[in-house]
Amino acid sequence: MIGSATGVAIGITGLGSNVPETVMTNDDLARLIDTSDEWIRERTGIRERRIATRDEALSDIALPAARQALAEAGAQPSEIDLVICATVTPDMLFPTAAALMADTLELRNAAAYDLAAGCTGFMYAITQAYGMLASGLSKKTLVIGADVLSKTLDWEDRSTVVLFGDGAGAVVMEPVSTGGFLGFELGADGGGGVHLSYPGSGSRYFDGSKPSLEMNGREVFKFATRVMVSSATAVLEQCGKTIADVDCYVPHQANKRIIDYAVEKLGISPERTVVNVDRFGNTSSGSIPLALVDARAEGRLTEGALVLMTGMGAGLTWGSALLQWGGKAQLGNAIGLPAAVVA
Ligand code: UT7
Image (cartoon, rainbow, N blue to C red; front, side):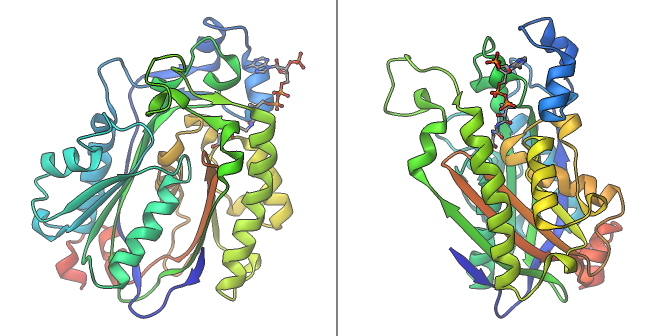
């Protein structure tokens, strides 16, 4: 699926993130399994990741991120009419994490549902939110991207435990006066799905025989390097832009080697690329919003900056979006003014 934005401009007016407090370093992992800090750094670029405690579920980690995004957007609870939570690790399949969080946040006028698209979940969710907002069905949407993949892992499988971490990000999306999303590209290849799966998570293996995430790292790596480039290129072309126009590249944070490959093939400078996989590992649906928060903290999301986001993951799925950062509401909210003041 590919398309450019038309009609009313839709942008991000609030942004938030949260990660669990517990830090797990590579040396901590090396005490649990046969691995080393050196191997993990060399093959993945990861130094440490955050891991949820036994009692922490997805909504516990995602709620603080959602609260930050809502506060920054100056959004009243009654104004949010849609909550989409991108995740493959909800508290439970139902009630959905989105419905539980909408209740806690007292978003009484909101439709709420979870959306599963693996690590591409956040890209799918913002695309869907865009469609809802551009059509006028929603006036103000809360999009959460969050995962606690640590709960799905076989902690004796060194090829997966070193990669993943837990984390959450959230954005408020609404019409903006300037800037906003320019276009989207999404795709899926279920035929490749077998390379990254969590078989016991649904109705196929209710007998408990497949309790953990399973991954063919080499195949996912090949897929990732291909789509990180093809998807980004497609959305740029669709929007009449080139990579030279991009001020800030926000790739899915899966593996530094995948990011380096995409940076080289796309021809964008590392200085314009956001990297935080070293601190958080792969947080799945939380990855891109967490990286957006870091990008802003580093001063990269300036008024008018062209932001390219690309994700990929289980499904197999991929997705890109092009966003012009800014607009009166975005600028006002970034410095903490209520939306009403800057509208
Ligand atoms: O959102 C998408 C999520 N998934 C991904 O992004 C995963 C993409 N794939 C990858 O990032 C890489 O394939 C990995 C990091 C998972 C693995 O890196 P690799 O360079 O493809 O390593 P490999 O699987 O080819 O394994 C090389 C060696 C093997 O040993 P032998 O057979 O050469 O003796 C593995 O057994 O490294 C060994 N190995 C490890 N050694 C130490 C695999 N995992 C580890 C480990 N520590 N954690």
